[in-house]
Length: 138
Image (cartoon, rainbow, N blue to C red; front, side, top):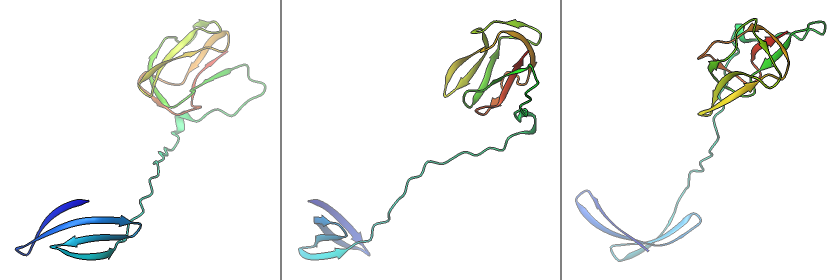
């Protein structure tokens, strides 16, 4: 049982909530019992979805079967924290290419290929979405 004191237009009211069942409340106001129907607002909680248009310079290239370039894509959305390679640099499979910050964690992006870094498509501090092109290895 909950007890409340209300002052309405200068009048003092002592209210005791005796019972709450579904949409009906039984209460006592200054010694008189009342049964009151209530309406409850149903709140729906939906997680917001962030939708961001792809910027023209971040569009993934069209796959070219005859091309010898291998793409390194962002595994998840985040920010480029530090570039560890430069264009023309030789890389080995498993070598760290860059560090990406996502969900307040630093993630090493490793090379899946052996070859030469041909094109770097992002700069330090750039925000990227999942599957954005980061760099190409020839």
